[in-house]
Image (cartoon, rainbow over all chains, first blue to last red; front, side, top):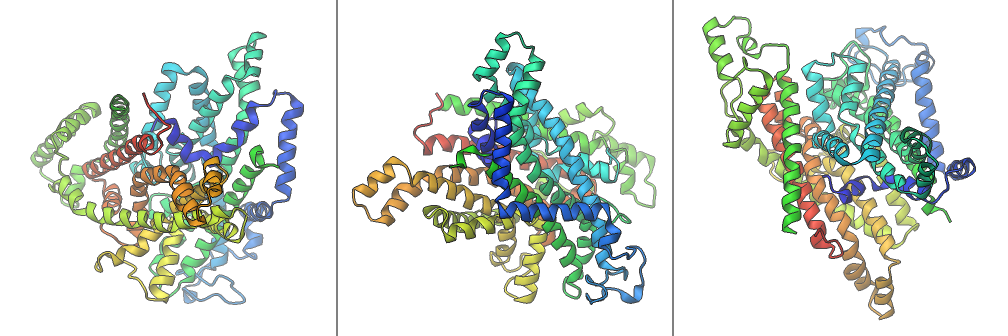
Length: 314
Length: 307
């Protein structure tokens, strides 16, 4: 697990972007800009990126202004006589078991999912960049210890680890608890990514030049190394938001994530699974929206990786 | 080689200990009292509580509990759950189901993943290549949970081709859950094979083989494919450990009595000994296959030498 071959193997797609882009440039502002403007030019031509971006914006809007997308229907105003009614022209997604408008419920579920996805990814980035940079920059015993700790967390599957933490109740219940539980067992890849980037860049000529001119460790890390490690981390973070949203739905489905009366896609899928034969729309709609949300981030991340990989440019 | 393996093996020990202690601490740091919960509505006699608390070492500080647990574990004793059932019995009863599931999943990864990857890679940017790229992106975007329901609904309920729950039909019952479990890795295997094949198609030795006038099939199968499979084989090896984690969701949705389902039930019932036992086992499997893969890498690629 500590073998570099394996680490790069698992994540080579995400890591391919920055290493080559970073080592051969002198680190000046002009070159830095051109990497990003080249990437943007490439990104603009990518249809899949636009599909992802439009879907992503749509779901962000849905999280911010759910009442607009729910066509003004209150998700909690329910009428049991409508229980599990099929979709109709009036009620596009039909009704759930309690007779609540399903479109409104699915739409209002977007907010929790996005908040957890974003919050968890921020914690992952803070932890991953911090630990990875320290580990890669200082090396030696520090690196060995931090890498071994990352290995320990890496050996525990994300869902299993988060399941145990959430069930133990140490973090409490709710949105923040779920996000932190996911981040706790999800920061290792970011750490390894940053660590390998830092090690690669640390030995480059321009870092040696900066050191020769008397720059301090902190200055070298912040001004010279980190900006060059941004690209692969950005790609990783984008895709990870999608994966974390899926993981949140899974944990909630398993009963340890968000609890009713919170509105969440995982809860909706959980309730719907027993109705798969009689009211398949109960599973279909939250699943569909969940998948499209995850897809939005995966598509954007994929496109970003292609755009930031100078090797692919001709 | 021997020295490398020994060193790698020693390095895995702290990871294994750390991971099992982490889970142990999380499970036993619970505020609740599992012994009192055992009695349900009728409170247990104080003597019984004292006896059981003593038996499960619940009065000791956490680290001492862990050391005692470890001592038993090294003698092959996984302990008992709070109902007095041996944890090792639960594991040996549930393990075959998960192993079957994993075997089916790996078979799908190899069959579909590698074939799709090869077909895409030999004609990069061709029609089939684009089909594979788009479909793998789609598959990666669908959470296992959703995929499981899609599979259950279409292949199980609508088409009636596969059983949607249980293991009553032998290997046949594992096809659908196996495919669902494999899906994400399958997409990755296809992409990995594609990239690797496309890269090697431009290699000097492939050009030489073609210049010798070898038939296209021989060039692809005997020269390109064999060399391109090295990263794929190692990925699949490492994936065996990862699949064990994904089995939690798959086994829950398809109602398979495997190890993933067992650990999930144990987490919910706060059966500490079962959770720690199974998680330690899963971590061991994960670490073991990663070690095997590292060694395999050197065997498959003679350019890599660990001395």
